Length: 101
Image (cartoon, rainbow, N blue to C red):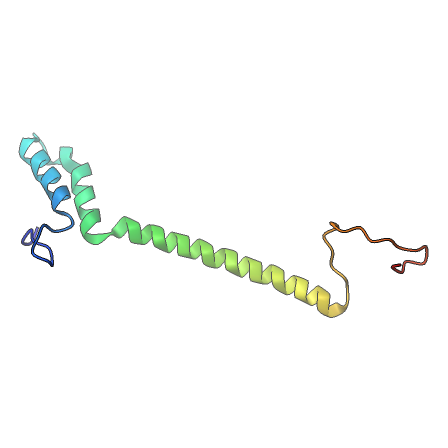
C-alpha cells in the first residue's frame, strides 16, 4: 500500500481490504492462507475482475445487436421483395379468391 491516504486526505478506498489482509497475514502460519483477502485487496486496487466482467457483458451486447441487425436485414429483404411478413396475431378475413375484404 502506497501511503494509505486517499485523494482527499482521508482513508483510501481500499484501506479496509488492506486491514483485513494485514490482519490475516500477521496471524497466519502460511501466507497462502490469506489468498482470499489478498485477492479482495488487489481487486479493489486494480478492478481486474470488474473490467473482465464488463468486457464480457459488452461482447455479449454487441453479439446480440449484430444478431438483431442480421434478423432485421432478413425482414427488410423480405419486405423489399414485396412479401407481406406476418406473425399471425391478427386474423384477416379473406374472400375465396385470396383478396382481403
